[in-house]
Length: 387
Ligand SMILES: *Cc1c(COP(=O)(O)O)cnc(C)c1O
Image (cartoon, rainbow, N blue to C red):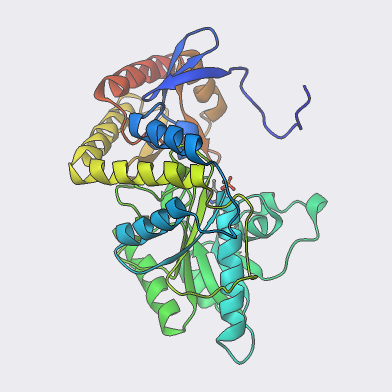
């Protein structure tokens, strides 16, 4: 192997896919309840996404951002339209980069709007914000801050509850970064009232609310932005995973125009290919939302998971999450890696989240047939688990 040793990979490699089904190099089919960690929002080989990519690839894949890029401008406009209010978007290539952009925006805002510069970002315990040095430091889990990669960047702290965050805002604080539903931290959704209180307090103090919707955004929880479900309008939202329909993209979306030329940039960010794919993806997702299909799929998937909890009460404690960003919390002592490998053996793909949650992020257009087959396989896998 000539790759860096960064992942504990399963010994399996996929060759093609269709809908929510993947095929390995021996032609065996797998039902995908993971969608590449929520990336393949419309599954594999979606006609409209593939057509948009093909057409764009034939015309142009990339030009520099020193020229206007029409699909990038269109996608930024469409994001604002989907949110329902005016926004300014910076495109990059990943979730971590989108959060880096949000941190830089906050620092500039903190320098320009207060007598004494404010720069500190407060995040929440069990959050995950990325793997760059700044976003690692924004991540509210000590295991992401090993001494070996020190020194880390100044200007970050985290607290476990929204009340503790509010109690610890000080003169240096410029804003709060929060995943409304924590993707890596056990599929935990914050309480609506607490989030509203946080938004209100930050607004009163002219501080920034940054929602990291890299995983929970782009219809994953039922709306284009999870912040809409919470009834808030964050100052900054970051998106990535599902936004490109499988093509790498990140977006930092701000209600305020803060940057000027020279402040920030990205060679590949917002390129023709990624933004064309993104545009086709979010238009199709909006259509699924408007015709009721998305909510129907969500209700059905939730019902299947409720059944699993009922059927395997010794394994599962409860279901949690919103829309089709869902987790089944395991009882203490149940071995999560073993359940995931039993599922893989039965050819259904699931994910872990934190230490004790089985995570589900299926394609948002998964068919009834694939759901039925996937849950039949998962039932079989779970009945093979020995308590
Ligand atoms: C995945 C994820 C990130 C990091 O995204 P990358 O594209 O891997 O850099 C950041 N925040 C959240 C909430 C995520 O789920």
